[in-house]
Image (cartoon, rainbow, N blue to C red; front, side, top):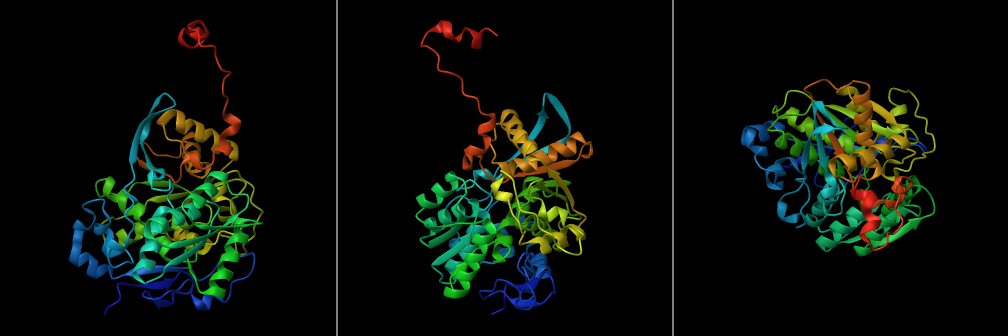
Length: 414
């Protein structure tokens, strides 16, 4: 039987079959060193010529998985969880800060996924592939979102999940993991420590690993956001997309989705991807173009993008170089302010990592770097309810009032 897809190494270009469990290119991964981003990350390659001839422009007629199936590494949609994953809202914001915007601002709200984050896209694909291949247990390392995502998806699929998390991860995310019935393993260390431990477990016990920048199917799940944007924008690519960046997997996934569309010749340009990182955790951006990767210990309250060694650095850097991506660094204060502005102006409460993308857009706007009339998307990747502690500095709850009408005069007579 002809393979639906094969893998290609982002570093050396070696190809591997897509019908087997494989994580990294065995040649390039043998060169990996502690404290350095991983080499050998794999990307799925499809028969684009055949897909184009068979489906033409009908492939994206509806926002349903069966339309995307020819470009997904699974055999059928029945293996996906029954939960509603993807097809998230795209909100058109015409006014902000009391003025009409001179450009189109579109907010892709992936907090509407079942476990309230973008990570459900990847978890669903990994879970579906595991189901089709008789795998019942999946593990992952996470700062919280990927772990709660995998836990929830596995609960829906009748699969077992084991989640390695830094012990300092936000309580709301840890609570989600436990409530979904996963086995949680708090690690006394950083996300990178949890990641390394999960790899050792995979090698020692042969369990199936969902880790981003390790399992290539996570990219395939995350790329569905690009397909949805293409469909939601009436079969056009936006001009610019602001993406929060930690490991670099989400931005690579969005790149991969639009690259698929380029190869199918249904779009004629790649959107400008703007990688947004916190100043306290900007190891990916600061190393772009450098001969030698140098890491600085991460320090940001945006835990989902707090990474010392961005595991998907090489793939992300390759995409950004090839397609002329851009980057912007914002402070934690700017992220917090953006979170408040976003909530007050749109009714969307985003977690700090998601608000970082909005902060990046605001910085571009203030610097007049967004052309008039252009279409600009901000990826909002997670709900603010995931991490209530981070916004406490801007929360001021008033003192209780007496149950008397006179005590409300100041509110209603201003």
